[in-house]
Length: 218
Image: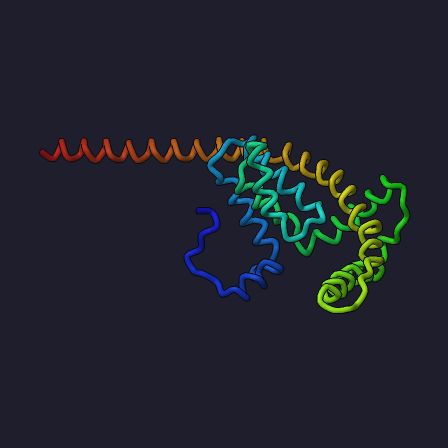
């Protein structure tokens, strides 16, 4: 199993390392690349899985990236494990660039203007949407009135542009990743098969030599 660990981590430690790996993101990325190289599947299927995983990183469906990547890769006949691993392209280091890029492209395509370069305004939109969700949920059990103004504003100014821009950038990034992955995986698998054949030849040669030595000894 790719994800099976010999030493099970506590829940809090696992959550903390999902945000920032214990040995840093550089080591984590190297580990993911190694796992991708060793997947037992054809280069094109692995590349299709990578395409789906990268594409999902550009969608605003936070919390569902891994699940959706796995599900979407099935009808596309992509490698599910590769799709899941590729979702780690979206991390605290890359999400700021993904978010700003997706919002910029989305607003441009929708013909809207929004100060995406101001983090404070973006955070305020998220907070307002969250507050509406909380207040309206409480209103279900009280006599308070529901008000979806801030959530509606968030949808039109942030979520919808993010969805549109992320879809476009996700397709581009996924396609680039696909065409980069195929030759890399192909070369790695050929080199690995060559090493395995060489090792098998050496083992057979050693066995023959040992058998000859036994025959000579008799």
